[in-house]
Length: 274
Length: 190
Image 1 (tube, rainbow over the protein chains, first blue to last red):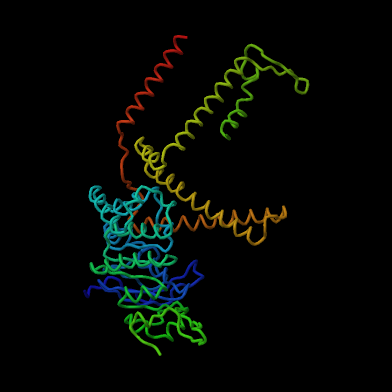
Image 2 (image 1 turned 180 degrees about the horizontal axis):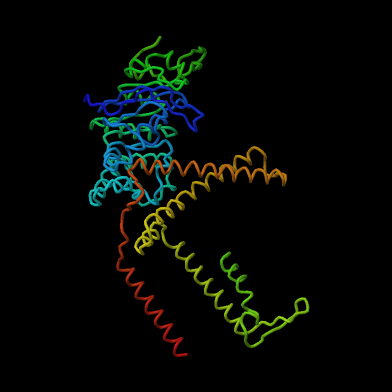
């Protein structure tokens, strides 16, 4: 449980060397932890996931994964690259990016095939995962024919097929209807119960309540604004309001107008506010 | 339609006696010079254009009646390099995405400026959209490559499900062979 799998030390990153996205991030992630990275739009949540997945590399500072520095050089090493890609899976925010094969079946099998897994084993995994995510009827369809919710489920399946130890999820529930959100949360909770390390970038605080033990709040200055236990962070209304994660909502009950923070987190955290 | 028309254009010189000498069918004058169309040239051009039209028709028929996933499998079965097949499949996949994007962009334009656009303004809008689509395609290219890397791609793609022939495939193949042999036999006898 105490094995450190990711360690970020003073990580800086900027796009085109002009637009800063991370300015001095320090973070330690241990095996089995469930982490939510929350923050307003443009605070660097996706960038952080890309850095953890070895798709971007810091301008300054270090990202350590499984005791080794993540760099272009280290990922050229075939053995490390294979081991890292087998252990870490990223679900992209835009499912259209992730689903590039002509059929759903081929998309799900793409990752395991690249990692040299036996075809019979891949077929077994496809059967299991498609059952788990209820996408059996989609296997021979083309990804462009699917709805957003179906695409998202297939994108998750394409990563789960690798059976990674660490799941990186970029806004897994954005733009989905409540029932699909529920289904995806259930799948992730099931992965959590199997001891997977899950790192979720989101601003959907409802799923944070259910899924995360530790929450990192990224601020507009591209630094970690706050971090701590999910219950502590989520009960700090001022912190959430200052970071655009909740807003004051005003509505009318017959003749009485009252204000409260939108999202009704109080109910889910078991806090009764006056 | 474009390919047969293009083939028709490139066969025009072959009609004339300068390129294909033979029995004259018709003649006319261009800038005082006599131009003769020959029977051999005409026959050659008709044969060329009809062959191309037939081939294109069969390709269209095949693509309209066969699922593209099956066509890609067959390409792999025929020994076409995997990277080429993967690229073609991705092109096909993302054509739909871009078509959707273009449709949405034009809907957005229509909703803001209506149906009637000044000619010059229309040209500007089309030009900006071409640039916009180019930028998006470039961005998508990077993102998709990252998604492939993230799932273990190292430059040599490995793809699932080799093409397997079934009973009906063999029946069709046999029927085609019989048909072709019969046509060759009849042609040679005549």
